Length: 267
Length: 327
Image (cartoon, rainbow over all chains, first blue to last red; front, side, top):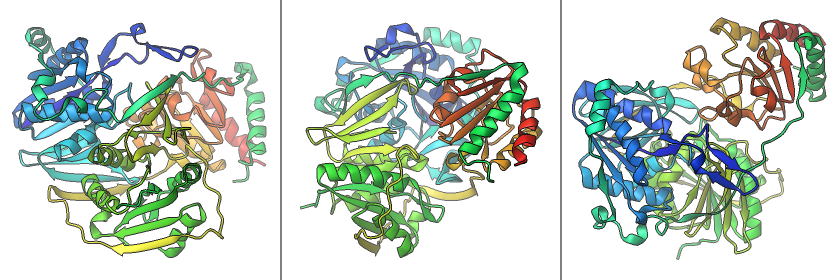
């Protein structure tokens, strides 16, 4: 099995600061980490490789510092790691990101299975997976919560769509996007860390994919959407009424009044 | 020449009904179409015919033209196949704007379609408007909902998805007139799909309830959720949970509220033993009234709540059941 895992480096969401007045994200306020959903993608790849053998390639697009995300991917089981990095790629929306990722995927090999996290925690769009599949003209299954069966010829995944749970069986090639329910990513092993220290993150620039994409199709120029401005909303502030441990009877009574006023007590 | 003087809503036909997000898309879609002088068209792909009365409802709620395309292959959620069918339809009627409900299927189909059209797509818009230059202004949260980005697209169609229960439902007017076209189409099946099989329906839909009774790690075992269910039953509500409850296998994922679960906007949200991580707040912060019960007076949920009750849920819930059960 040749497996490709898509990786994104994101800010540590719990620490990043937002300036409501200036409408700015202070990216220096937090460190960076591998997008949490991508760890589930990587873990899935490792388990499939354990069963069927093969090779795991991790691919990311981002600035030079995203190298550390790929080193982590190597520590967690990726055999080869590639970083698409070029100032021409900057300012990309999901369309031009997916176009570049798919062009690189074609260049790097014949992958049976491509695995991505369901979304990134900074973009929140859940678009890059399906769009990469579209540019590769292959099927995709989104929101995969379980890999029910996997062999060298086909894979069955479980996903929740149309308010029901479906099992979908595909032949390869296929792209899947995975949820956190899929697995619990294990921590990098000592051996993995040693490997990551030595591994060379191979850089790919626009030159590598220029036969497939014109310069106007990548980065900001290749992005049909653009952000006009950013607003940091004021947090919804509620006037909180507090009840301490000795006031619960009053609380229960007050809540009853609210339920009655909202006509919720008729049931 | 394609007729492009329209705004297209792509409906989701599942569970033998048109997904109710359609009424909200019709409301916003009608508003945008009137500003931009467009018609509102609805495209439905289904494996079976749909009652005229159900289709008429869409006209009463603001649609001008409805196109129902019928093919056996539309019985299963297959994004690749649906994308191909929509692309074929767009050859005749190419819209200025496409709106799609941000259901799981919608969020999976829409990006594929946008990539095939090489056009911009904005996911999970919380507001849409026609800007002065006539383009679609798309506003959406990002950075785990910490910012709102104002986005525009340079390409047509301008595509956006909208979550269920984000916008108000369209008003109903039985005097509205529109056109309904029903067509059985030939469509080749998707050869790479070996099988798509429905395993089970979702047991519960927590997004439509007026009262949500949610429990977190303060609820110690699966059995104890019966107590929450009893309170929910009294108020015609549903039981929901925070993520750690799902992770421990105590309750199914479909009841999970939060960033990686469902968004709910009930009239009353009870948070029992939920600490209030930002990921949880993302799923319920827009509830009309939030009532939090927690033994820890410094629990972050208290800051997000209208009523913050310090105490033990094992004492307070039985009291509530006793009080709210009697009229």
